[in-house]
Length: 133
Image 1: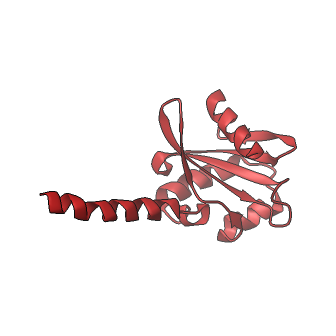
Image 2: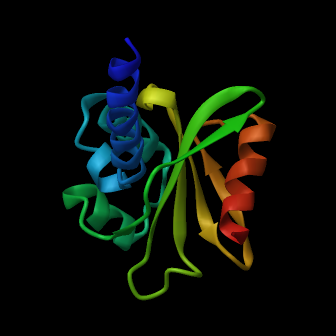
């Protein structure tokens, strides 16, 4: 029994490391994330050219999904940004755990973001904070 527990530890660590390596473009290949993303993208009007291009082929500057907790509920935060102006033009995305629903914010480090997907105030605060970080 003890040996089995010791052997399980490297497997769990490997799974955690693999989970840390999931980028937004990887997650969007999964059905639940893609469905939530597609629904969110319908709200983003007008859609900037760089975001439309990313939406077509998922090729662009995107971050890893980072797990966060808001009001006791798990979420995953990621962004995609304009390739030539990542600091000033970014789309932050907040997924409910497992990708069931997505919320977004479009903006930059120096301007107030526009929110999409009708995020609650606590989610808006988390998305706005992500622009500053």
